[in-house]
Image (cartoon, rainbow, N blue to C red; front, side):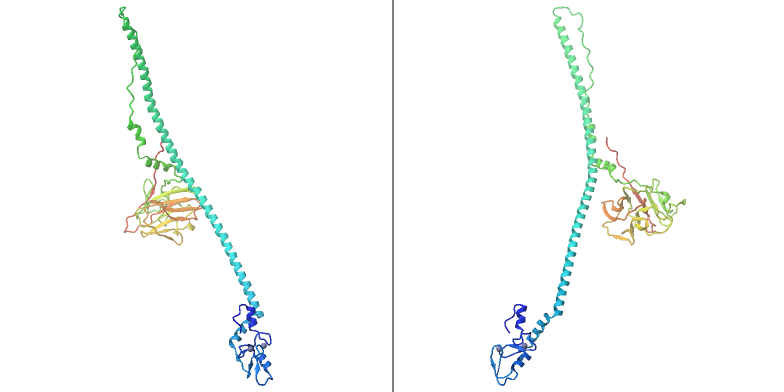
Length: 431
Ligand SMILES: [Zn+2]
Ligand SMILES: [Zn+2]
């Protein structure tokens, strides 16, 4: 055998019998290390008596001796198998399959790249839309602040003008008065000079003296007081009026209240009591669950309101469709016309989905903000103390909804805690 073959071609040549010029069959090795097929060398030596020779190198051997070379035999089998038709067909099929699978994978990757790019475009578009929205909201606030500032500065300017006008008029009157006095002085001096030559029979005619008002007072405190107060706080309070949506002034609709809910006279406080109210029956009233609605309803636009739940260990609140069945026990979920947040056992907050979605809150809620964007069908709940978002429903109402509340039935160990509707009346804008 020659040195290790470097290509398949030369390997095949190395495993070729010099007698039959084909791949070895039952390869055997002579003492000179040359290989031949056992049948070929046997045939070659047949009939020869005495010493025999190697057909390749002509070396002479005293007897017909050779060794079976299993290693070469194994290599020959490999090469033979590798060049068989089935093997080649298999290989070709494997090639095609591998190529196809790589092509498919490439197609997958290219699709994935396209999807990534689309996703990036969507992200950019959403960001642009949101940016416009944020800018719009802030522009409205800036405008309010700017209007407030302009208004206040204009008022300051008018008041200054008024004060200056008062002093200016006094100044002008004093000028006139001084001139009149000077005229009189001149007349008197002339008359006085004349007395040396003639007898003065009467006092010369003098111009009547103008009675001057006292100098107008400038009260620096009265002038400044409007501008030296807690201006930022005052303005901030005034801005409530411009908020869109601003906090909504809600009141309870007593006609919807479950008989065990008692409502305050101003209709902003509701509490559950074990003493039933005398009540009139009507279709609006909740008779199964301890629920109540607000009088106000919404079927377009954006609205926000705040509710104080205090330390109550148990409540539901949010909004309910006008169409909800008031006489049945119903699991609260958007599918049944309720978008709610709930508390159970003092610290288990959930969003009113089916099944409930448990919320992990860092602190207990005292005041809850409810936001409805009817047109975008969004209902969100906030911790009204720090305005952190608690939960957002994206499948909001399509039809008229009412703010909804349930103080739940209080157990005997807890004093019933009321649910209060919060409202901050705006202060009047300055003018
Ligand atoms: Zn041969
Ligand atoms: Zn030889």
